[in-house]
Image (cartoon, rainbow, N blue to C red; front, side, top):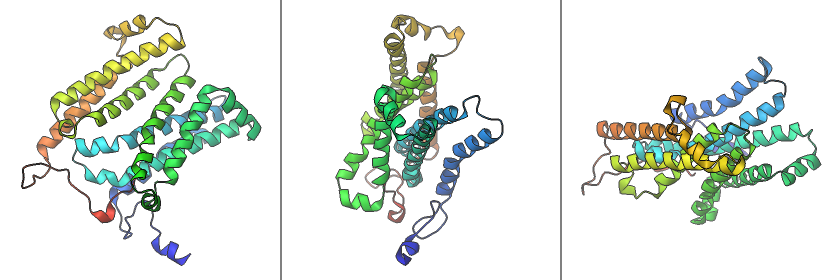
Length: 300
C-alpha cells in the first residue's frame, strides 16, 4: 500500500509530481461536459424525459472525445506540438468515462433491470453496435497503462489500432439512433474520414499544401457521398436529391461542405504555424518534430 501511495501522482502531474499545465487544462476540460450536464439537469432541466436526454448527451460527448483522441497524432504533426502527446491517454480514458456514463444512464433508463438491458441490446441493432464499441473502449482503457504496454510489447500498438474500428462502430451507432436529421452525425463522420485519410498519407506529405488541399476536398466529397448513401438506404430518399442539395448554397452548407471548410482551415493554420515556427533542422537537413523528454513520454 505504501509503495502504491509513493508512486501515486495526480492526473495533472508528471511522474516527479510536478504540475504539467497541458495536463491540468485537459483534465479540467475533460470534466466540463459532465459538470454542465449535471448543472443543467438540476437547474433548467432536460425536458420531459431527462434521463433519455442525458443518455443522448453523454453518447455525443463519447464520440466527440474519441475523435479528439484520434486527432492528437495529426495535431502533433500539423503544429509541431510534441507536448500534446502527454495527454493522449487522458483524452482516450475520458472517452471511456463518458462511454460508461452513457451506458449507466441507459441502464437507469431501463429501470436498472439486467434482463431488460440485455433484451434491449440483443433486440436492437444500434444498441448492439454501440455495446460492442463500448467493450472495445473498455479493453483499450484497461490496457492503456505502462504495465500493460510492457506485457503486450509490440502487440500493444496492434491492439490499440482497434481505436479506428471503435470509432467507426461508434459513428454507425450514432447514425442508427439518429432520427430524421443526421447532419451532426454526418459532419462528425466526415471529420473521422479526414483523420483516417491523413494516416494514409506518407509522412513526408502530411504538411504539404497540395496534400492538405486534396485531403480536405476528398473528405468533403466522401462525406457528401456518405450522407446521400445513408438517406437512400435508411429513408428511401433518392441519393441524387441529397447529393444535389450540396450545390444549393442558398439554403446553407451541407455537412460535406462544412467538413471541407473546417479541414481546409486546419490545414491553413498548420502551414502558417509551421512557417512561423518551423521544426529544428537536423545536421542532415531533415526537420524532425520536437521531442518530449523520455520521463514524460506518454504510453497511450
